Image (tube, rainbow, N blue to C red; front, top):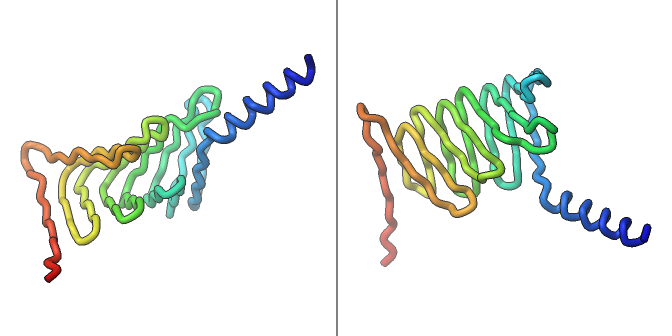
Length: 151
């Protein structure tokens, strides 16, 4: 009986560790507000999760009530995001680790290979490598697509 409980516990522990995500964040300052389940990183913020890198002036990490998972990461001020050959710059960003979704707002510049896109908002589905790019009523999406002729 104890052997079965121990095996069940070890299987549960292995599954929990296998599904855990690790986010490394460095900054000049960290403020923790436990009543709101938020951590505020400020000054030269850098965050890394797998192959997703985020730089900003300020980053707010919101966790679940039990503090076992990250619900949302919000980056503010001079946001720069790198993932493989994709580079996104903007004023603000929100990353939802559970949905594997990234949203960047405000004067957005997207660089991939030699292609450049300017817009107000980009929503990136990181799992399926798809994006929705949009701009407000007073501006339009602009794209410069470079294709190299190989003769």
